[in-house]
Amino acid sequence: MNTLTIAWIGFPFFIGFIIYLIPKFDKYLAILGAIVSAAFAAELFAMPSAVTLELLDHFSVTLLVDRLSGYFILTNALVTAAVVLYCWPTDKSAFFYAQILMVHGSLNAAFASTDFISLYVGLEVSGIAAFLLISYPRSDRSIWVALRYLFISNTAMLFYLVGAVLVYKASYSFSFAGLAKAPPEAIALIFMGLLVKGGVFVSGLWLPLTHSESETPVSALLSGIVVKAGVYPLVRCALMVEEVAPIVEIFGVGTALLGVFCAVLEKDSKRMLAFHTVSQLGFILAAPEVGGFYALAHGLVKSSLFLIAGSLPSRNLKELKQKPIELKIWIALVIASLSISGFPFLVGFGAKVLTMKSLLPWQAIAMNVAAVGTAISFAKFIFLPRGGQGEAKPGFWAAVLLLLGALIAANAFYVEAYTLENMLKAIGTIGVGWLAYFLIFQRTAIKLPRMLEQFDHLVGFMSLISLLLFWMALPK
Image 1: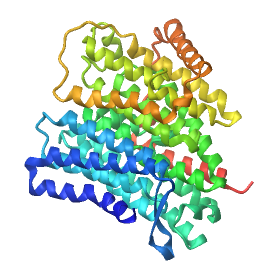
Image 2 (image 1 turned 135 degrees about the vertical axis):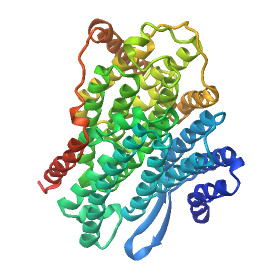
Image 3 (image 1 turned 135 degrees about the horizontal axis):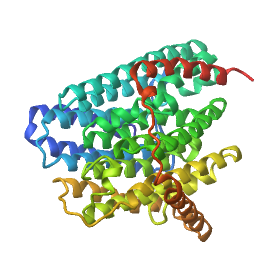
Image 4 (image 1 turned 45 degrees about the horizontal axis):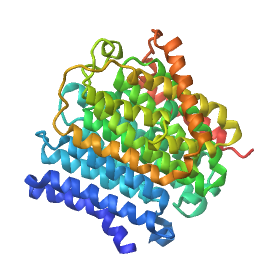
């Protein structure tokens, strides 16, 4: 299994290089990379125990693949496959597909890492490849958005790297477990870098502009899986080091509430989805022991929603109320919206039930409020008029059907969720959200200020969050 794991990590990079040699097979090689990752994830779910690989024993540079990794790797495979299928009929170049594979391979490496150096390499490679995908249209707007993303990401990772050195100084190890002996400033610097990279809490306010202004397939890739590279190590650290788990859980609750508050008031469909990505990352962090399953549910539904949003007649939700949506596209939109709202028979239901059952008592009220906010947000989509004329883009249905099919099939991971009590609670939560939408939020015209998303404020938030993290990491 060790040899297979090393081969699996290197495979996307190898075929990404092959694409440049035989560009006419770019789509086929890209989809092959996703299939291989899906097969590897299936193998992880079938394994009785985790597989650990010591790369540099003295420095504790270690890879670990287990069921938690399997959820993130499977999400990566399915989202990548959907994006490739969506782009299949287009004139995207071999360069585009090669960068998708670079993102895919580096994320796989990050999802197998349990040390700060391996993780750093995976995060940096994925960040550079994502930058190239965001700037792919080569317009002034796309280049500025990409540069903004790259600068914020790399600045955060510089702080992260200093924190990793401090961990090694304290424990002579780069392992995540070294956080137990690390000084507060090391925890603050590392977590600040990961919070920015993952788009968590106010550190993630770079995310709405980046995800909403990117091309549709790139938005799906970013929200569906790329941000998970910053969230996964936070989940893994919380599970490995008991002392830092409360910090992760507190930020989980905070980001769930912040993201859903902004999503409820947002009038732009893609920005609403982006803010909701921030919120849903909070659900992953609030209950780290089941975060992998929630990451799978969120990745599938959010990538499908971004692909569907790209086929709507407008981004403005007010305009969409006056423009009926083609019936088949509306049905796909409703299925995805119901899943993320936690409706039974879709994987979002099981993921929310499992997460809510795993919450600490102090988290429960806040996360239930966030769940109601989710139902309010997606009522905006569910109750849009249908019956209009329109054609979905070529490749749309292959990608969306793959993701929607996975939303149903993934119920198999947690069939125990289907009890009468759980189903009634889920339907009740959605009902409360829909009632609040019709009575209050449908007519609300509050416009969110974008001042805090400005470039200089994003950098300032890094310092503020670092100070907050330092205070939280101080011995009590």
